[in-house]
Length: 293
Image 1 (cartoon, rainbow, N blue to C red):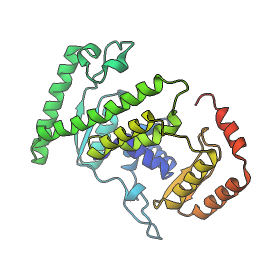
Image 2 (spheres, one colour; image 1 turned 90 degrees about the horizontal axis):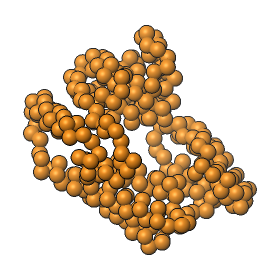
Image 3 (tube, rainbow, N blue to C red; image 1 turned 90 degrees about the vertical axis):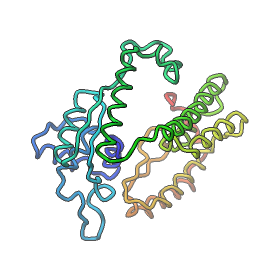
């Protein structure tokens, strides 16, 4: 399956956003649509989506969006129903929409309730509606695909998800109880998010446990700024995908950007020059002056 918003991020990384918004305007749509929601729809207007250029490279991101047969969305905003209706029409796919269950009034301690105290967090009638809609979705998918839903497999997956998220809660509480904190968001975000995309697997749950144990034991040490530049260099050197790479966020001490793999050598040369000429103290001073991080 493909998540609409995640596909939008891939389109952005491939520098396709401007082209796709041009296609949206060519087809009569407003130029200020939410790009995070509209990219997949925009790509459905692209006549070159699955073609190759003269050098044999795919003209659509990752060879183009796989043609969907089913479009499923929760009605999280006014645009979702319309975007997915148009997407389903353009691809000849079946459309299935669901309500988005949220609390009528969010309690101040919602973050403590959200894990397993749903009756205190949400209204009972809304939980009941969500359950019935999920049951109906299961029945609909079984008829569409000819495959039966395995409740036991779902239970195993959810047990692993709960185990993983439980370790993240322990990490949160551990960090909050320390002064100074042993790690920051900048230090841990990559370690957390890689496993989050693999929720429900044994690997992801073990990864979360290992991260918690590392922080608990005090083994987590932030790398130096120069070491971060070496890590960046290794990443650029090793990336084998065709993408636009840029370190344009405020948390990056050095700005390096270019189209991989075409600009790889130029980007690595620039990093080597920085590593060989900039003092660690100077880079660290920049980091420490980023108060918002």
